[in-house]
Image (tube, rainbow, N blue to C red; front, side):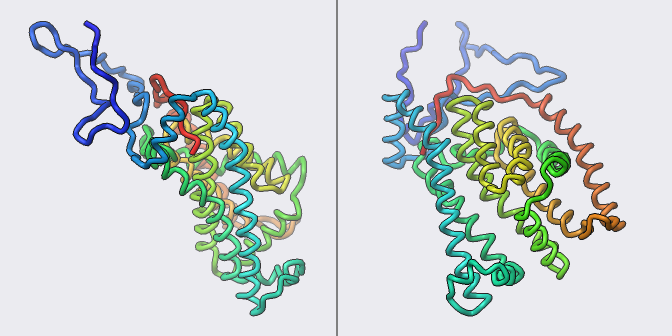
Length: 367
């Protein structure tokens, strides 16, 4: 007999669950089991409902939901343009504006005067970057501005904040999170060797290296590694993997979605050598976020990559003809050995935990 029950309303009543699964019932009144025997090798593929529970009851979210339902093609077009072009440009403008303000504030703190002309003085800016307080301002303020839109726009999504940003548990176990994170230094190391041999090191990267080494050798190494590891891992992942990639994946598929988000992530670093060097890392982080069903493994991997890079920069010899110290050799060997082992474990996780099956998935929201 055909089910004549109406579809669940939006939003549902508080005492109803529109996604409750009803088990089929036989003529004798006994429930009929529809479960298949478990696969002894690979676990069953997890499933998700076609439309996530409407956690948000914001009036704007309801209007977005109605527009998506009534004008699906126009919605997809607007959503793609916003996520692929509008959102990156808006976030970048906020980043530049905050960087300008942060430089002025740092100059006032370090030099004790409001003098915009010092922004063009390399020696004055070198003193600012060497100051711990000035360096904190220069790093934290632009990153906070970059992530601001990605933090507030999901509040009007009827899909719920956490689902909108992929801030969910996902279906990977914690050991897979750790293995994926520990693999990132290997990817960064290979990329750096290839790009460095072809293009060399840019002046911007040399200046960044000098700043990191100066702070690290003055007893600030661990806080520096934690700050450079955690700040971009949170802010950049929320923007490029959480907000942009998650939406593009639902609009144009994971292949194109990951490619666009990774290119945007690399282009954000602006320096040409740095852009090319971090592109493989961006693709890897995008794949991890997609396959795990969560942004958190990508955040952890980004944190490990940046923190290890800071330690490597500070411990590396300053001159090209200088031999690395025993401490540097021991550090790099241990990190690379762990990364090699972790890469094999990550491959097992990619094989053992398949992509969740999404039934009748509609394009997710642009806002």
